[in-house]
Length: 434
Image (cartoon, rainbow, N blue to C red; front, side, top):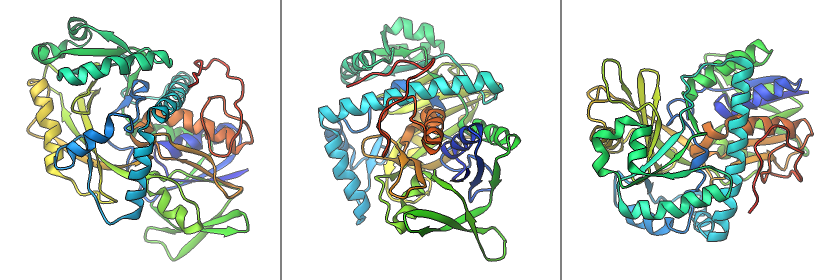
């Protein structure tokens, strides 16, 4: 079967890899000159199953209200005359109900654990390099109230299959000695030793090369202007190559929408609605060459919603979410807040005078559950809406999507779109149920 994948970020590239492994003829289309150059380019670098608690939880509404006027708030709603934003926000409030939060945690955990297993299998199979570390993720807390709330949250993670252990401050410093200088500020910590870290951009680019070696065709620098339908099927996509002459129609047997936050813009032109809204995230990349004191274990500063990942001789610091439409303008206040907090915690870790700032639009759903599965058109499939967990859920989502396109039921217990049941898992971590 000829499958056309729209988007060459981590989700599109993973989809292409697993589709090709199942014998399909795959073409990937992306407007950028290479793979992984938008939202997958400079994220926080964490494979973080331990981040399964969604933004929408019972404590979120009061926090969001408190953060409305704070320019450097971890989650900032910039209210706009945008019906999509208001609809997203109302659904977000519904997802804050305890019963919905519990269901969403289970779903996110199942997909994240499955995806981590898939990533590890792919790494063993191909030897793919991406500055990965398998040293776990350490969450630390400097605010007593945040720590008090984290203890029951960690128990929920353990109850639902994620071994996120509460550890003492001394143990936290033992796990990551770079925290020694700020030990007196830390009031508690949790540690998930099965989690990992790595460079999502480098992974996506190297996986794209492996895809090409397996016969996948990539059409870079090519903008998708329209989707053409015939009856209940997609017939083709109308594309325009950079510096090319006019438009070209690319047909296929099946089409996969993996354009991240831009997915709903194209989907709505053919009457498909998906609850995805852009959540702008920020990162700073700092050089650690010639410096000592940078962490090696991937860290999460939960109170500030900032993550730290060591990527070779770089320290990636990422965090915050800003719901402000499709603007990709850098907000220096939010960028500088990342560097300021890093310097407070690790004063001798990196070259703080020359940070490289980046921003990207995460495709967020109100529940934090991605939209994966079949759309209302018989040959249109979605793999989008992963929010901050695209790197964590990329391989598992791609493999599950390839199963669905191939007419198989995925192994992982997850609420896919228009897919019933679940296939028996083989060598896959046991799922949990709400």
